[in-house]
Image (cartoon, rainbow, N blue to C red; front, side):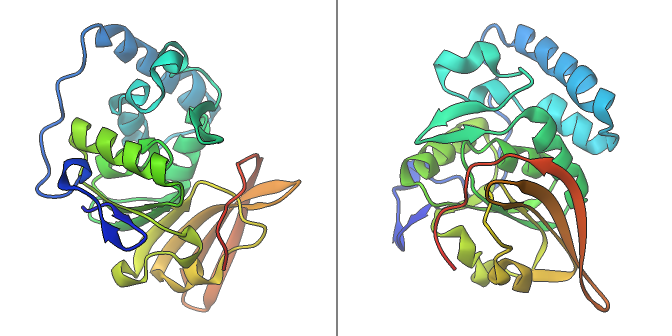
Length: 237
């Protein structure tokens, strides 16, 4: 993976590419975090209907506390979104799990994430065995996510750019997961779906809902999932 900012390759020190590496050794005291992750999975996810065992295992494995600011780490496994700087948030664990489950990600799938944020959703997708491409429009977040993913050993293709345009050079995608809400579904993202591909996206302004668009034999099929509240998607068609 290389982190590209406005078409300029960043220093290799923040790149996350190359062969998949063994996960970094968790920091001292992470045993309590492991217990918190286990409770999060049982009480916040499984109890609310998340049933895919692969998704539950990924959520139990990825160290969410590594993707939030140090001052918020004691809240990393709480049932709420958390600020990560630049007026952005890391989504509530349940929403991350729900979006991952409805995306129906399988090992070997090529997956685009629009809105890298902290890098947490990308790490969950990579843990499922996906080939993950992730775009972040806010440069400081893109750099920070690249550093975190590299440090923890996640193999993710990450670049800075406008998510409305998707990643045409890497398309088509088996799944696309969007972590910010546009007023309408961006046509470029729909165009980059592979046959059978799923686009998971929150849509709307004052009122938002999570939708899943699937490219079926007769065209695009849309499923309405749940009302949600995401930060607005920035950039433009």
